[in-house]
Amino acid sequence: MNVLHSANFPEPHISRAGLGSDPDLCWWLTQRDESKPHRVNVGRRRGNALVPLGTVVPSSERLRARFTRDGRRLMVISDKMLYCFPLENAATSVEMRDLGDDSVVDLDSYDGRVAFLARSLRWPPVWRLDTASGHIASLAPRRHEVSKHHPLLALSPDGGRLAFGHVFDALEIFALASGESIPWPQTAASIPDLDLRSSDLLAHLDFTADGKHLVAVSQPRQAGRPHILRVGDADGQNVRDYPLSNHLPTVAVAAGGRLAAAARRDSRGTVDILDLASAETRSTGEVGSRVFALAIDPTAGRLTVAHADGISVLSTELA
Image (tube, rainbow, N blue to C red; front, side):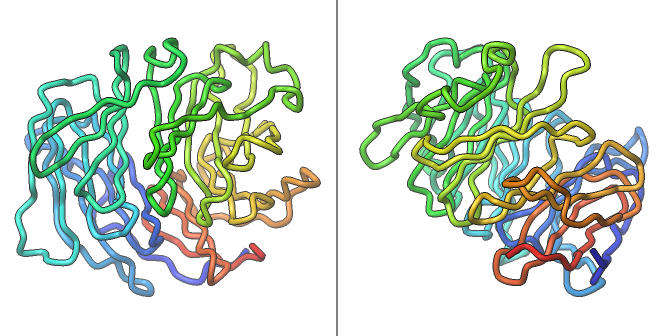
């Protein structure tokens, strides 16, 4: 893999970063010194430059940030506050809403008007929030055990389905129009050693860009066990596991569910393209520093990497 573009962050000491469905959009968390608050910066990559779009000052570093699926807003949860930053008009002020609850640990939204929130150690664990009115309605999973620990959720690209769970083998997908849910995977018959990982938590959850596959990564509780990448049809069928022996839970899976990008556990920012059908490594590239997030551009066949130094775009075969 060759680096096509490399845009550096305008300041050092980046502790986290993320990418949007549009991989040119990025956010990064920084703090210059102890006298200044943590800041979530928003920018757009243009070639080898990173154009700042604005800044959100959250109430603490304990936060979760996501771009809306339509790419028009950045949403940030920090303590009890929800921040919504519009990207199209930089002069528009950041919208804030006090949630009155500091247990929210994850969020996702299609356009910022409705946000889905996940709460840790609470019941019900999933909320549907109208951000304008503040009205909240709950989505109750079938299994009560999913209210524990640190849940994750993910919206499908079209906003029609919501995946939710906290335990690796206890995911559910809600059809938001009907309110019905299905377990994911539908059957455990194809998952080897499922009982050994039944208490593992989730480290990553998302849909592929075409919405046809769900991607989950385990967070092993037992030392020495690798993260597991699980990919399957969004209806819970054809689900398979792939061990990430030398990799972080930082992954991106291409449309079709056959190829994945995975970041290695090293300081060089090594990223592998994995063929999930053969479990072979197709190609490898380096970005020079710790990897925070990966995004696959389904049209250009390129991989965008957010890392400690900036945003890099690599050319790679992702068809």
